[in-house]
Image (tube, rainbow, N blue to C red; front, side, top):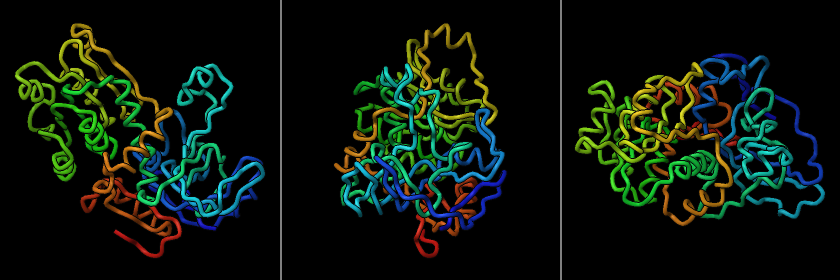
Length: 350
């Protein structure tokens, strides 16, 4: 079968790999139907590593994915043909963090698409049935794959303790930033301000519910948001860019006593922040680590139509065109917002 493997920065190769072994107890054989390209995938693609984890041998990327059950192992009752979204993190279930309900903080987690754990950019894979979530007919495979980043947004929203009527800034309008705009709107935020350097992403933020989309090079972001809020600042700021300057901008943008939630991952693994600004404002600073227990809520929001992911899913590629898909996602070409690879699809579909 075919898989897309990363050999080093910018080097994606589609090649033949062995078929997976038959599923064992509690496992299923999945035909992978959709894989979203995530910002962390792009870090591996650009730099060959992320947060101290380096690609030292060929790695199959992809952790935002959906699939279809092709075969089941013993002790699994899912019908063949069932469409599913997939939780990419296999936590140990035994450590202190897992026992306390924080599987996203499990130090022994095996996470798809990180060294040395192959991910979903392949035609078939064996996976635990306990980590699958059934997709209704109304939710497409591409939407099913996007439930994972939506779940990250939901986790960040919970960390912020956002209440209806509060004001919000989202710094960075990539896919997760735009999903945060959708979620904050659904949660009843009174005003949503976005900062983003890429023009078509600013336009998307306005379409999705932001009342202002700022060009960060035009005016200091914190000053601009304070100006737009009458000098007060926003109640909550989500840092979703992973740029060196955005955590400090988030601290500048929030009011005294406000909340800052860091979602983005910086390429240099450093947090740069004015201690005086954060201390004098008495800010609450939270770090969003993946997600926990948010898949059912993410699925319910999409299935009910409360959150519409379709405007974000702009580009679709066949597995054979994975190298082009990564190039488009990395350069924001052609107005791309969210790029999805569809293993098994013939040709390129956009």
